[in-house]
Amino acid sequence: MGDFYEVKANLTRVQVSALRAAGVTRIQPGIESLSDHVLKLIGKGTCGLRNVQLLKWCRGVWDRRGLEYPLRLPRRDARGL
Image (cartoon, rainbow, N blue to C red; front, top):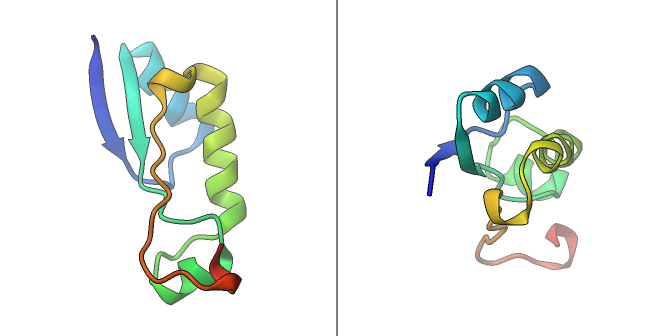
């Protein structure tokens, strides 16, 4: 099955590649939203573009089964989709 890790959303491309090279087969990045508005409301200190960038890097080294990204946050309104 391989190793599974929950990781912070501020990984660099080099860190993503290093995880894969170390044998990590499944990760779940800590991405709560792709919306700048929602990320600011919950004080994440990141932006939607940075989260999309991480997802792109991860998709380059893991297939769909190796990358888990639950984007669920209660009480979203139309601005936070």
